[in-house]
Image (cartoon, rainbow, N blue to C red; front, side):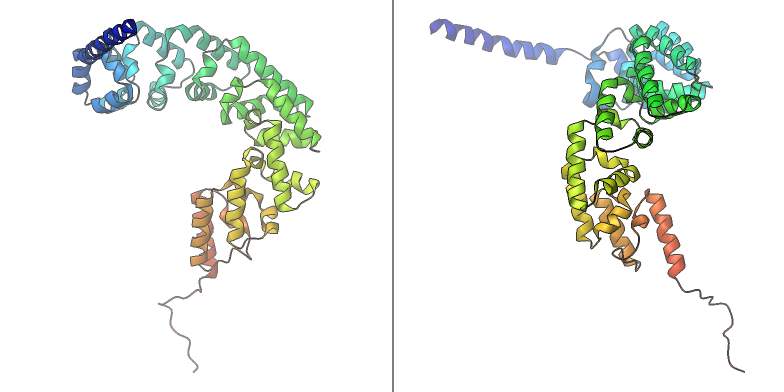
Length: 368
């Protein structure tokens, strides 16, 4: 008992000194001063990635010089540092290698600066990934991919370029095989694959087995090979993120709610593939929102894409249409669909059609 008390006392004496030593550790004054000269918001860095301010050695001036050479303004440089202060930890030699690598797929320095601003973590990466990046660029070029597309892939999904090119090659070959087995044409395979990866580059991080299992499940539900190919293209690669269990629950719930046949359900899914990856609770809220607004199930079946909209968007758009005299209960639901811009244009066309044509300047017709 006495021994345990003694141990506890010693630990209690050590903890304050450990905390004090951490607190007393000073930030790198050089880093802070250089950031201040560039009008970098230090408070943002301290809040999000304060650990960078304690690092040494750092290459602030070298990184600034490199970015200025590429054409970046000081305000742009400050923005990059605020979002990704780790940039100052990259050696000048590594930055030179990165510039050469990226300029092999970027059309100009200004395009590279755009990449750095939007995806700084993709450019200021570890030097241990350079060989994989180079090999993967060569691999995608061998597929006939446009350099602009490759740059977009490496910027938005850098993880794909940090893995061995052989691994990406095996996954791509699996996708190509599935595409051809479903009836896709050899002549279209490059365009299809390029579109698939552009829409969702993270499919390269998924297992081809997951996609095979999902396609097998959908085939069991009655979807033909051509329909599966259609779904595979429309789902933007999300089919790899689904599972037979989740799709089964969603399809069962949707069919029960809509009171439709198997064939009708398949047509609904083909019109609205997103239905497959919405969970039952989300669909429950969206069906409830539509039905509470007086919309009939038959209307939803005719325009199932309305289920892609959140309840907040649906409620707002229904209220706005109602204020303009449009009765959603009897009209088409197509007017609810689309982006905010599409919806505003649809409202404008409806108002123009309904508004009486009256020219206040035109002379009145009178009986002579």
